[in-house]
Figure (spheres, rainbow, N blue to C red):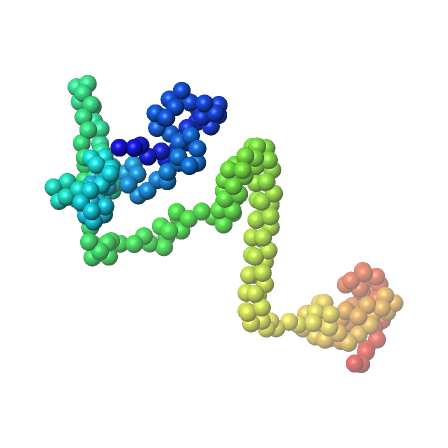
Amino acid sequence: MSVRKTELCIYYKRDRFCRNGTRCTFAHSQSELSTKDKHENNDETKRKTRICTRWSESGTCFYGDTCWFAHGGEELRPLESTQSKRPVTTISNGTIRSAMVTPAPSPPASVWGTVDRPTTQARENTQMSSTEAPIESITRSLAAMGFSLCDIAAAVRDVEGTVTMDLALDRLVKQSKAELETPPVLVETTDDSQTCCVCFDGVIKTVLIPCGHTILCLVCATKITRKPVKSKCPKCRGEIAQFVETFA
């Protein structure tokens, strides 16, 4: 049976010479090169799991015993999933032992539905803060691209400043919106400039002479100027000669 040559000979390709000559199992030219077909693969879990189409149609197959597919029902074996079993190696008394361990089946969907979901507080505790998330993402990206630690630290400082400023602006915008939405509170105020500075009740209606201050109501100005001693202005402590009543 002739050998199917599916790869070029590296010695012939490099030196244009191969000591094996025609006995070489590799091709020495493109005309000798054959293409691989579906029989040639390396997945042992699929070996002899399907009937060979050539054998079923003609009763013969030039691959013979090396054919990847089964030549009859006696050679056919069930397909094993590569994920259903996994080899486990253990060491006991200096002896290495291997075994195939089948994982436990997953619980039904109804069981998963009864599992309590994490509370909002738990989710908030596990989530990263708004400033840490972009910084960590940028750090990983720069490290993956091969930047030095100095460059990464400088980039992190710039990002921290930018993120902090953005958070402060967002906070100010929220406060401004809250202030605009809050209705104004009316507060009763009194005009102290028109109230007597002595009794804090009467309306100022006098002018003190000679200082010219208008700080007393008519009643208080009359009482102060009627004293036997010379009265003094409550504001500038200057002597009061007389007062003049004003009319608004």
